[in-house]
Length: 159
Image (tube, rainbow, N blue to C red; front, top):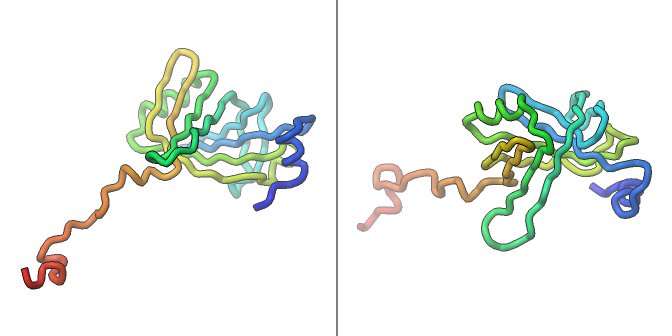
């Protein structure tokens, strides 16, 4: 999907129409919606019109290497007690969806959605940090099936 000229201009030169990051944190039974902005934003990028709450967060992408799966760091500048409690109570990876939009066009997606999955988190007095992976394929057991003479007879013929 090509970027709009206004998005490219804003990304490289700045100006009065900021690029906003929309974030959905899906805990399975409950989702939270944030925008990296000083004001709440109404947007329908997820397919449904939602109110994204103002917040202070940053997404740090890793250096590109050939070793392992790249991970990103999502850091909330102010520890929200509601998010902290939810992070501590969940026993499975959290899904994060991220979109980039222009403030003047909150319903037009410039980039995304990018789907991340949490692998670890830490909570301090002043911030919450979540480690994210695009697809945690190194954590999957391959093969998932066991190859035994009963289930795969052809592999064991002549032995």
